[in-house]
Length: 536
Ligand code: ADP
Ligand code: MG
Image (cartoon, rainbow, N blue to C red):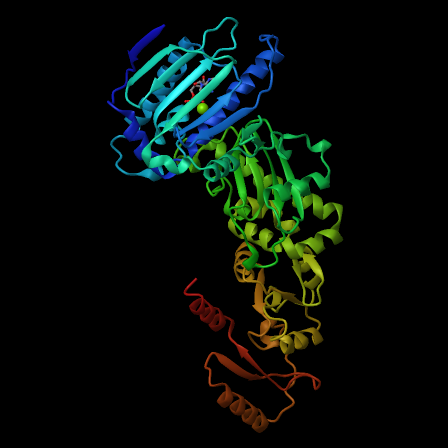
């Protein structure tokens, strides 16, 4: 048999167009072809399990090899295979119609590569790197004759009968001159490891299996131990510090989502590592740029999300408005908040211990995500300068009586630097006041958020004014210095300070306290800080 034919397509040559549009991401050809080989393998397994295929399954590995001399890369599977008719149907018609649509949609759009992102073109992405693509396939159907298809990326193809002993498909890419970089062992191996590390069928490259076909997130949580989760973390991020805890996601309705999210230890802002979440679709790696799929604060987590319902072949802006993506985001946010509640309820002391390492994450979440604020505000802890932890609610109740001013406002005193503000802290303590430790970079934003959310509470930095002005209860203490003494003290301090934002106040205090304090008006202080931070 030999037949030549024309593919009906409105463009003379799809090759340069595909190449142009997928320019930034040439390496995905291997992801597409290997996932097709995996799909074909899964199909034969399924046919076998439902009794529709009774032949020998044999060894079902997918093999990737290359020949530097011949300038070819070959992807072979022992999957269902295709008859000549099926090649014409699935490769010529279906795939070409996909390609046609693609070309129609984007031919006038100039060089907007960003539109595509990860526009997977399936089989035809092979033409990004190959000047000629050959398919040699033998169907699983009994008595099938093997077929060979060859195409140079133009609208012409050729199909003929071929010799092939085993069931399955070989895709042979004749690599183009400008893509010879892919004819390197190291390059191919790293692409395979990147996209195929967790593919569900064994992938062999250079006599070695490069993947783990049943990664932890695909397994039943009930069968897994803490050890398993820690080991898998190590597999994902070798040589990293152990995570604190994790969530195993497993949803099948109303959308499909599996995955494992780990909470890393984050002690301070400098340890934040974003882009540690990997996005998979049916165990095929898609990207680790998940900012359109998970809310920003969740990007502090590490791990894997796998969902066939996230549309991967479309533009970024589409992703953001996609309703499945929104639902998935909402679900993850809820799961994370639930996990924190569980830990809090199960073991308060343990939760307090962990809070050192997750506080930044929780606060960042409360600030940046309204839904998370609602879900997690009750389990966000604050710590006083003696190291005792409170929920915001508990803290409010504990200071209620002592720290309410004459206008009935509750005052939360806080320190941003325990050492520098020690004199003020001590002085406030002798009055029976409590002071919160708010010394991380995120705390000033966190305080703004809490002030905005609960306007019955005023936050005042402990050194921002004289204590009886910070908490004006209406009763003044007597000043023990004479008028004359007061003036001398005041002018002495002011001449040394030479800073108009600092105010020297002589306050009424008990004898064991300080006779004078230097404070900086809270408004002036915040203004100064804003200027220092470049207006933010
Ligand atoms: P998709 O995988 O999204 O269906 P592709 O362009 O990657 O689109 O492939 C088109 C079709 O060609 C597949 O749906 C499948 O029917 C067929 N096909 C591709 N590769 C193989 C293969 N290795 N074995 C069997 N069939 C294949
Ligand atoms: Mg495909």
